[in-house]
Length: 280
Image 1 (cartoon, one colour):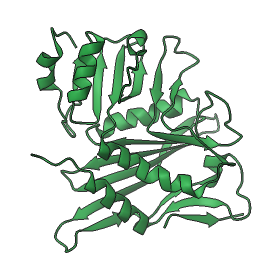
Image 2 (tube, helix red, strand yellow; image 1 turned 45 degrees about the vertical axis):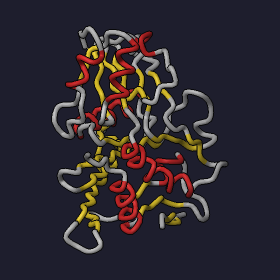
Image 3 (spheres, one colour; image 1 turned 180 degrees about the horizontal axis):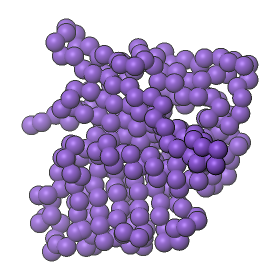
Image 4 (spheres, one colour; image 1 turned 90 degrees about the vertical axis):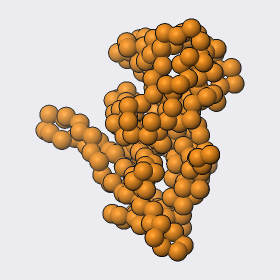
């Protein structure tokens, strides 16, 4: 079980675009040019992956939610590029399978679950840059109030490439002015039969106060289909989230770092693999 260690696109119609909007795994991400809202929704509803890049879009184009079943991963006002996350089953279990056990280990009195709320850059990006994470949260009451940044962000990707996930991670640290403390990336690669988990933090790297992003952990979980039953091999140990970075204070009695053990990670990846889309 999870444990606490105590420590004191131009097109006449959507149908003509759809042939190019497919899950491409780790090749170039699918990209379309925005023409109108109806076509965009049609394209999103027909996309098989969990990731889509939309160009030529202004902030006002994305204001209509229309019961949308997608998230605004990132929006850059200067380039007018919107990155969309389509929450497929496998995408959701990739991040919730990590965040839910953590959430269970906290109390309502100490943690603010922010979910996929939208965050916007207030300084230096007047055009409306913004993002919606997969799973986010921060300490209560330290981060109470609308618009306060989370300390923990988890981003997952199935058809989203690892370089795009790195852009997500960089956006959270940079745009929050370093208020975000931990970013977890969960990348599924069914071609390599593994899931990659990376934990990113920041540290002051020079006497002048320069801040550097650091990959603190890289865990690979590989599926072995030669065994009966199928087994899952975890390299480089358990996933550990530091208490001080999560809660912005020292741990008290019975408090400590959050740990997902090797056994926890094996169960996690088994549940993820069960959501793998089946080919016809």
